[in-house]
Length: 199
Image (cartoon, rainbow, N blue to C red; front, side, top):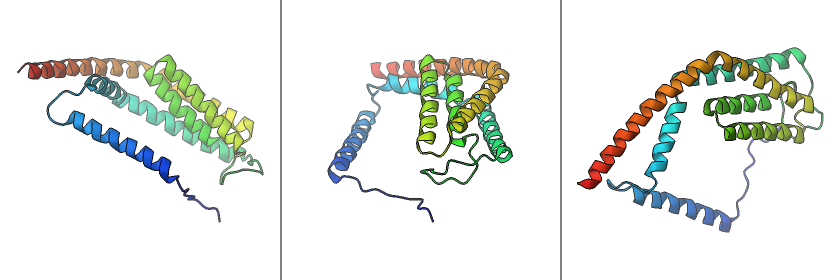
């Protein structure tokens, strides 16, 4: 029987330093946030909040869910139809067929959805890097043949891009509307903070 959990010992000195640093950051943030003062990093918090709100819109969520579910269903359907065996020397426990790679198709679907919704060059670079990292990982562990990971990446990319054609107009409009609403709320909050500081 394969072991599922394999806990590892951590070096006490290094772990203590890391834990103490993280706790110190939490305490410093707490001190900076205490009371009604505006912390020095409020602009960063406001920017993150505005960004996160624009991504959490209903149509964008629907696109994400439909893309993920479609890729998952097609991946498992193809595994069942093709029934390609995995490499014999796999370094991980595997219980399904090999083609296409489920890990790669899921990763590709997720990072492409994020890149499409963010719409920035750095998001596309991160998406491509994440896909390549998962592809290398699955072949390095001998869990898949090289064609399995290429097939998984191509399947997910094709499905997500085709779905985006149907969702892009509503996602872009929804994001634009949400950005306007967030910008207005942030300007009101900023005015209230500045009015409170003058008192």
